[in-house]
Length: 288
Image (cartoon, rainbow, N blue to C red; front, side, top):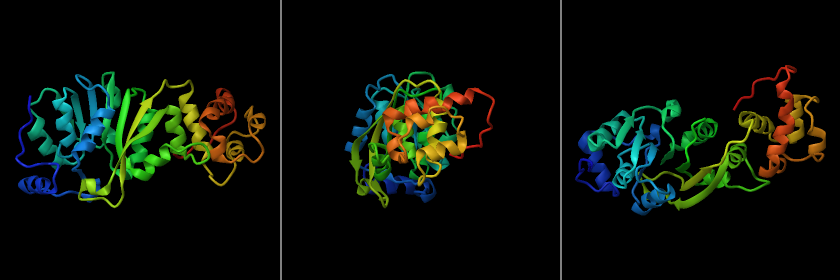
């Protein structure tokens, strides 16, 4: 079923302005609303999702529905998530009669993803201010999507793809969770209104979740608790000298980014997390 036609081109600033004016709405800085006006970026995002005909797709930040429309046109079953009530009005008017479309009017951080039937895919233009929070939610949820394609700030995307020696806490967790790659860079002028930074479309392919995944995440957070300390010092400050394997695993003075290489993090986490099975000692809470 076709969506209700909007008589203006939503890939052009003039068209977006006309639609917003028609409804009496404005783009909101509070929601990081910058509307994509480059059709080839929409196509690149769709292509990065892989096969989408009859696929269940959760779209975050659906906005005016430019990506939504293309997903539905290609046969996807779209569950859009939109926190802005004004954008939700437009989405319902455009797609509300389409049985392949449903709308969750809520903050993406409050959505219960356990209710989504597998397999499913996750796509969207994230509010840049909460990108890290959304990525952490994705890596910690039990009902993992089979593919994730997200628009995010260029510098954040590049940090997620860093190699050993320059890894951040989030990059370590993401690279242990799956594979990550930049699909295409997006210039600021590809949006209206134009943001102050360039962006990138990133594809994440989750792998099989390892055993003790929550303990591994906890371990990484501890490792980065004091970035200027060595990893060994950060871990012993929490686990104590009872944590078997610390002495034999670490080279003296190993820096955090080098020690948390993707290949070594699993073996280190296993060794350090072994004592967690015993009732002693009591561990302090780790703040994300």
